[in-house]
Image 1 (cartoon, rainbow, N blue to C red):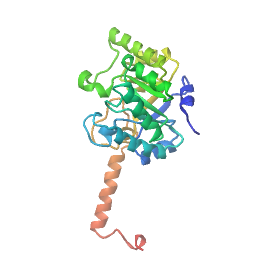
Image 2 (tube, rainbow, N blue to C red):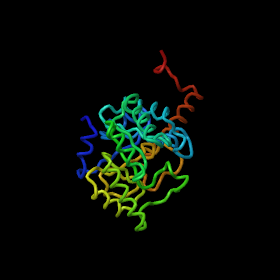
Image 3 (cartoon, helix red, strand yellow):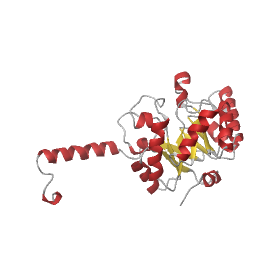
Image 4 (tube, rainbow, N blue to C red):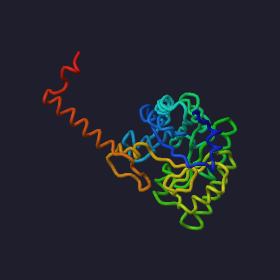
Length: 261
């Protein structure tokens, strides 16, 4: 079944949707086989696939390169390109770089961080026919100034998030990511707007959830965020398989006649 931005937006209030962040053809194919309706090519590429400490080193060229592969791997999903750090600092920057995601990588939409402060940018993109997924709450690209902390614990912070979600939806965002927002507030924000909300560590009441596929599959070695449930430990299985292969090569058990021309 082919998903579109319009179809995804219309899924608001229905069965909650499990969405993933993927970075290459192989992982996108896994998501496609599982029927995932929307795949984000996240700037978490920098930490998960490229080994950096934060998302800040992700570049437009790297994001386009990986988004092209994800598009080929998940042809029926909505593919969203994550605008990396400083790629949308001005409206002209945003238009140029978001256009690259659609024109060069074949993405269906882009995602960018920011609420009230980025409403004008979102509106400009939408007016040019570029669908936008907004991202409020914890914003990883701003961790140097804000740090990693749950959002919405004080009345002032909750009011700011309400203003953010009102601003980005009024500007035309087709969905909104709520990252690390206290669950009660995330539920209220979800009811407040007529577009899908996507939770990242924000409780069960959003319209959808995001998980980084590497976390979901247990592909990494380090710790994962509290909200990231590991449904498999493929890194352990892969290491065991590689060790078994090395042992068979060392003993000349591989390749035997059945694996030889």
